[in-house]
Length: 98
Image (cartoon, rainbow, N blue to C red; front, side):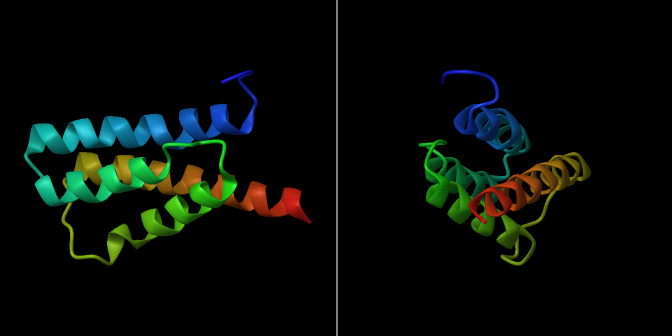
């Protein structure tokens, strides 16, 4: 990663790192299905400089409320923050393309 404002740095700081922390929480809570779902999103974000992969991951992330997973209050708070940042990031990406 080059500078702190580069696309991959922002993705890593705003989305990847919080999802890693969330996965650690799921491990502590023994929430295996939830861990698997978010681990898959981390895999999608393995190249944080690839805008298409990031957008695909944001779309997948937005499905978390509809796939039958249950979350603790702590996890739900973290997910809400991740979703807000991911949506803001995707809006920024869309605006920069126009």
